[in-house]
Amino acid sequence: MKYTKIDPTLFIENRKKLAASLPEGSIAVLVSNDIMPSNADGSMGFKQNSDLFYLTGVDQEETTLVLFPGAANPAHREILFLRETNEHIAVWEGAKLSKEEAQQRTGISTVKWNQEFKNLFRACMAEAETVYLNRNEHIRASTEVQTREDRFMLKCKEEYPLHQYRRLAPLLYRQRSLKHPIEIDLMRQACAITESGFRRLLKTVRPGIWEYEIEAELCHEFIRLRSNGFAYSPIIASGASACVLHYTENNRQCQAGQALLLDIGADYANYASDLTRVIPVSGRFTQRQRQVYDAVLRVQRHAIGLLQAGMTFSNYNASVGLAMQEELIELKLISSAEVKAQNPDNPAYKKYFMHGTSHFLGIDVHDVGYFHEPMQAGMVFTVEPGIYIPEEGIGIRLENDVLITPNGVDDLMAKIPIEADEIEDLMLSGK
Image (cartoon, rainbow, N blue to C red; front, top):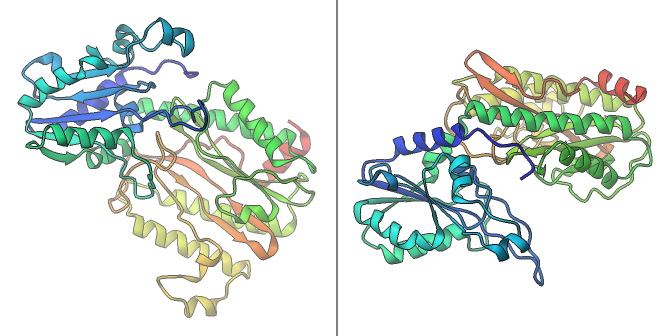
């Protein structure tokens, strides 16, 4: 890992909170992700299961966590199973965690090797009534391969068919959506690294630069500052490419007079940041680009002002939609007559602003949480309105990461330049 050690208090308290929400007689099991193969003897690298990392801080494959709060043997209430290292693994892959290192990282006293899992788990299951199993239930998930979670679930049900089985995801969805202070600090670090990368670009973007060169500059800065790299595939879209919401080719040359949309974010300690900014390739926005830019910025500020504990997403989205509607009328992109004649289920503003304004943010860039429940203090959301005008080759989106607090909001990206005048000044001065 590139990041500095995380205070194990985070993982200890996360487990305690989950254990308290498990009914009596329940056992919960979480397993790591697979290392996914590519071709020949290659692999696609390793990305830890978010829920397992949230509860342990272990960034290693072939890892299993068993939580059994009611176990008669106190040593069985938290058990971490790891892949045992050896000299061959140490030479070819690098040594894996020792039991002592895992105890220090996680705060879990009982650490065992994987070969001990079968017998220990059988002893636990003899006492348990209900088994909570985990699976990726994100509403936007599209999993077409069988995961390690899937394999364990099938095997567990086959070997222990008389137990009751329950879904762990709903408990973790609610818990993970409320960020621990240590998590917030890690996200601040991710945002600070992203800020450094963005400021680097303000000194380097000029007509003629290629989008992939910009991506390389960001990659350099992110990793230099101990990031794992990008939290998601970066979008570096010049000109009309900014109207493609998930443009990731990043293979075009930036031309004078174009606006450049940057949807980028650093990952730090497996926590995501998510920033979108638009900058003028030549150092100054055209008059029309500036009109659209300022309109989007006004909508974003309106949206941030709406975030508060108790706000529902239905009311939030309705208010943001009305603010966007007024801006689009002012920009002469839609008319009042179109608004009067619109289908309420497909409002006129959707032609130029077709995506949502906010999503949960945390370990995952599209983090887990329930949109049908009111917002709460401790949640972190992106705020990212946009206006996309393909016929004019202009796409403007502005995005900040915002924490809801008991007293309002804390914009985690407040220090990152967003005012058009400041961006132009920084680009033209080279500072």
